[in-house]
Length: 166
Image 1: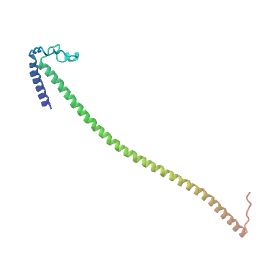
Image 2 (image 1 turned 45 degrees about the horizontal axis):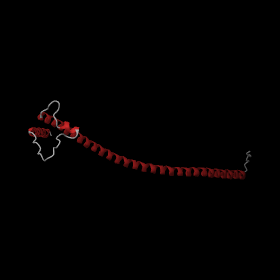
Image 3 (image 1 turned 90 degrees about the vertical axis):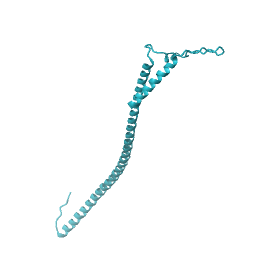
Image 4 (image 1 turned 90 degrees about the horizontal axis):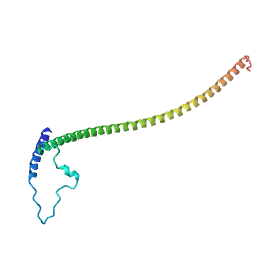
């Protein structure tokens, strides 16, 4: 990469030196039938653009300065491209992670729904069991009362005395 930068710098410096030497010729006077063209630029920005600096730089110095700026911009562009590549990789990783997390989220939601349904079923079964136990308790009381009544009859037949319960 540095070889190309040096090559481009040398080519641009040489071309600026060659083209700057061509501007030394005096302009030819305009033909009498042709209208005079104003040789000064219309905008003030253009006036300073092609005039030499306050420091009177030579074409070679100017070319070197421009090539240095160019190489800095090329380096900056390469850094920005690298940063863009890294950001694209990070974005791709984050998209993959998001996809995986969304899948896990959907699975968790499904499991939570199933667990909630199971808890509702267990609650219904628990209430049924409680009702059955309470009903069984009443049946047990009735069965015990029937046993006591039968026992009382047996005792009376055998001639036993039964005290009265108040």
